[in-house]
View (cartoon, rainbow, N blue to C red):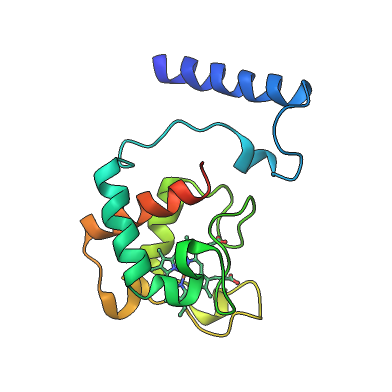
Amino acid sequence: MRRFVALLVLSTLAVACKSSGGGNANLSPKADAKVAKPAAVTPAAVAMGDSIFNNGSCARCHGKGGVGATNAPALSGPTFLQMTAGSFDEIVGIIVSGVPKDKIKDPSHPNAMGARGGRMALTDPQIQAVAAYVWTLSHK
Ligand code: HEC
């Protein structure tokens, strides 16, 4: 119940910000909404995820810092191709499943994204960490 009330307050605030002209007009309402930080997004997890993402294969396709590159979309922007809202759980889901070729939405991305980081074969704690890092990219 308290959680519900908190959500209600947050969404009312988000609406209030919008109607007063606050916020960036280029952001979609979903990405713009102030979302409570997921419990898994701790400084330690984000630091570990940063290292996995930027030293591992994620950055080869998505660019250093997830800014996007020829093979894969930016993960820092207001809109998403695979996900609806870029929630923590959605990010975890995409990393676990990967994106097979027939699920790729933008045909300019030629290569499938491997499940669990492909050859990196990420463990569950590593996936939680890299998802925490990716979550921060679109929730500054
Ligand atoms: C071989 C290239 C490649 C690698 C490596 C890769 N990805 Fe991806 N990723 C993609 C493609 C392609 C898509 C789907 C883009 C589309 O639909 O057009 C995608 C989609 C995503 C999405 C959903 C983005 C959205 O707009 O909805 C997330 C999150 C993501 N990747 C995270 C990661 C993480 C974290 C790693 C490292 C563990 C990683 N990716 C490694 C190619 C890659």
